Length: 160
Image (cartoon, rainbow, N blue to C red; front, side, top):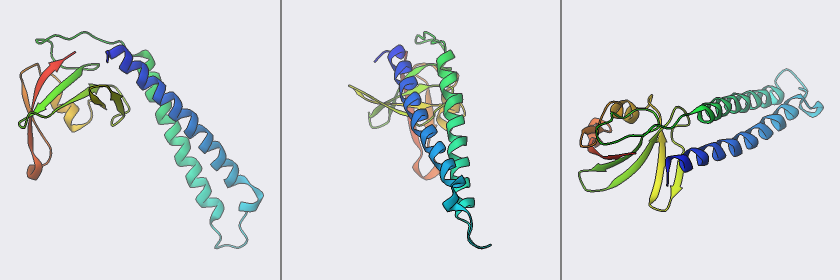
């Protein structure tokens, strides 16, 4: 999968997520303000709880809007073996057992998974521990990942 295809897939996924969460936020708001949610007594917190849900969904919708805008403005960069890793790098990592995985270094939406014929591509951000560790690395460099009890050594095998 090319980086352009990855970018388009991310935009598509975020757009679909935004539509779903926006509908859910509107429904939660309607429920919170509906006459049936009016408290019967001072201990009835149904409307308050519904408003918390509506606010949480509205906040999540805003986060998705910000991520979507960041990806729509994103300019993909070209990399070679000597170019330091930075935003828009598609990185192939290999651990000491020979297992490999691909990650895309994006500005937002860390943890988003994109299915590919060769496996799965995970979006990471520079703010994540793995993203911080990869910034500035080049093909052939190694880095440590995980906590002390589950620490693994990963090597940068390829950067596109």
